[in-house]
Every structure is written in structure tokens, then in C-alpha cells.
Length: 356
Image 1 (tube, rainbow, N blue to C red):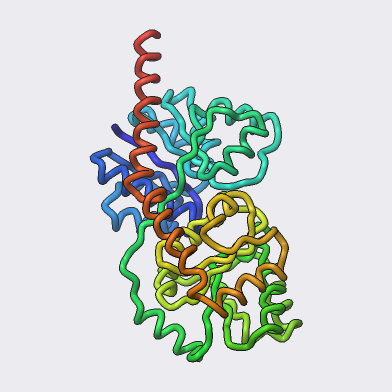
Image 2 (tube, rainbow, N blue to C red):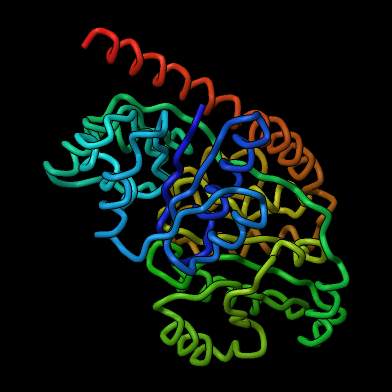
């Protein structure tokens, strides 16, 4: 089997990390894998460091041109983003290969052109039942659920110690989120929650890892609420998972979420979770963490306070979360599900070719 995986995003977020996990998993099973990526994107260097062949393109037009010209030599194309799906589908008359799109976002698609694009996609993989449900409402039914992967690694605890020492948080509980500063992640609800929490206790600091277009407005609200020494915007931090080694709690305030790789990380590293019930978070966190309604800053504050006050009371949830993530989100489990699906599609394409 010879696969082309397409992800031309410039950033390094959960989807790009999952793209790399997929590629590595396929390669470990003896599959020949190549990636098509945006020139200079972090995924390029990380994939090459993992021994994966990478092709670089400069933008949307060159992506279309490259796929149209070269994709016929592959057995299947896995599109990891909506833009990649568009490029793979539109150029299908030139390459004739099956296209699988892995969808990670939870909002409802719109428009007849989008509907047509999905119908021309041979199979859609949803990373949660919630994402599948959204697609079915839109009228797309060739959807398989294959969960995202968590690949635990040995954490560099000293790196976390050094970071926390610089922040002068000794003796404080450390609560954190890893989330872009954008509308979908709803950072303003998180800020309000931390303000509410500060009225309940003073023995904590909140660290927000991530960047985005709302950074200036979020910082302004932090300052307005007098949280400048309590709520710290950390920006993008490479290998941020190392910080899980010293976290007391992980929190996410998303209003839309396909699943959430960072919650999977928290589960894998035995860190308790407080989360909204947005999209796939509901099925992921229910019974394994503290769930709140979207926008419920008071509920988020209460959940954080309860866990910080009596962490041992939540050990059962943490243990359940760890067992779940190890069994359902392992690289081996997800890789097998993808490859079984790919083989069915490739065999079907070969039979169609033989008949024509």
C-alpha cells in the first residue's frame, strides 16, 4: 500500500500532530507513506525527523497542481484538512484515486458545493460520534468513526520545574489550558471562570498555552478583572506536554470541539480534567472528568475548586480516563482501523478499474 497524506496547514496544532501520528503508525505497519505539506510548516521538519518522505508546496494553487500531476501513483489519498479534501476531490479526474477525508471539526458544513465535495469523497472519517452526527445532519452518510491518537512519551519533568520556577509559582496549585485564542475555544469564558475561582481561593495560578487572533482582547479582559498575576498567557510553547508532569488540573472551555488532543494528553498523564460539553468533549470526558455546559464559567470554576480542594476524590475518574485512553486511543488501535478501511477502498477501486 502506497499512501499520500495531505495537510498544508502552516501551524502546529492538534490536527497536525494527529497527521504525524497517523503517518508514523502507517509506516510502522510497513505501509509506504508520503506527506504533502506547506513549505516551512512545522509538520515538514517533524515528519522528516520521523523518517517520512515529505513533498512541499507553497499554497493552494500549487497543492492542486501537485496532486493532479503526481497523485495517480498512490493507492489512496488521505486528506487531513478541508482544504486538502477540496484539492484531492477537484483533481480526482486526473488521479482517479480513492479519497478519504479525516474531519476533526464539529460545526455543520454549508452550501451545495460543500455537499457535492463530500459526495465525491469516497469515505469520511469522523474523530468522534459528535462529528459524525453533524455530518449526517448535513446529509453525509459514508462516515466512519475513528478516534484520534494519544502517544504518551517520557516527560521532561525538569523542563516543567524550570518553567514554573521562572513563573514563581512555588506553593501554588497550577491549573492550565492548551487552546488557541480564538472564538471556538472561548477564552473569555475561561477568564471569567478564573475570576470566579479567585473569589473562592487564592492558592493557584492559571496558565494559558496557545496563541491566536483574540490575544489582545483576552489580555485586556484579564487586566480589567485584575487577574494579571493569576491568569498568565504563555503563548505557543513547543513540547508543551512536558508541563503535564507538574499540573494539578487541566481545563478546556471550548464552545466547539471535534474531540480534543490535549484532553487525551491529560488523561494519559493522569491529570484531572474540567471541560465544557462541546461536541466530542461530552463523549470524551463524561465519566472521566468534570463536565460543564458551554459558556458556564461558574460551573467551570466550581469544578476546578472541587478538584483542587479534594484531588483524591477524583482518583477514580482519573484512573478510568487513563484506562480508556490507553485502550481506545492507542496508535495501534487507530492505525488498524484506518488500514482496514483503506484496504476496502483500494480493493473496491481496483475492481472498478478492472471492470472498466
